[in-house]
Image (cartoon, rainbow, N blue to C red; front, side):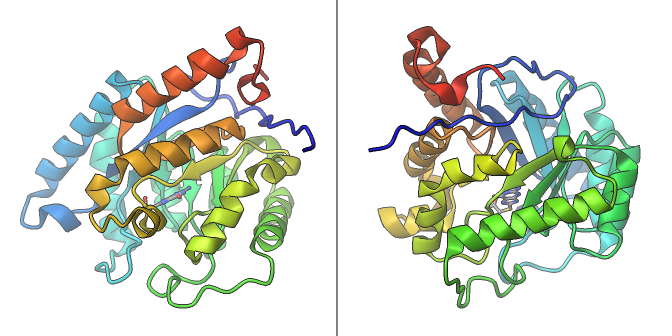
Length: 295
Ligand code: 7PJ
């Protein structure tokens, strides 16, 4: 077998993030939608989200990702104003977090509002394809996560189709890097994500995960989100997402070994522990794994 080097491009400079830190870092998922807490006040939701973000950072998350729009098929639609109203109190409450707060949004107006309120990263599952998003992201000056998705969240899992999923996702991300360049967003600000589970069958997800090293050729750090996703349930015969931690850790370590820079996860302490052991064995001290070499 050919020797492959799994080296990630450097992350953009971010507050509280050691640029020399061994990779990957953990991004804790904080859900600010009220789907699971219907009937609770917004104030209560914001307080819980703030608490959860702080607990994740205390457990070793290098950053958190706030999302207010559920992208699950069948989820109740959220207006842009509702999205902003849910995010802003949480961002305000996290001003002193000391770690970057990313915001998961597809909307230009939300991008502008959260950038003004202290967000440090814009995470867009539609790779800035929304109306006005390229301009809003460029004006923010913030690092951007560009994710690949086939179709729309409501219907994307009905019949995903590719001739060559890896080639198509690579070409799509390259085209979005070019769109960013045209809008004045430098490649050094961009983080890429193949969008595991977003318009992909189990086989498509596995093909992308096997091909992660090829994505380093695009010259940007990689963010990988697999935590509790349905392909893990399908393979492990586990219908309950809350019981998919073992599978999520297995895939997280696979991505770590292939040079992922950021792992987006629900289970922060567990993922941090798994990475600590992986790193102790195969990190720079071992003289070994280029995936965790300092950049
Ligand atoms: C992802 C995301 C992901 C990025 C969600 C879930 C669905 N953003 N937002 N990558 N997933 N960049 O967490 O299962 O994989 S929401």
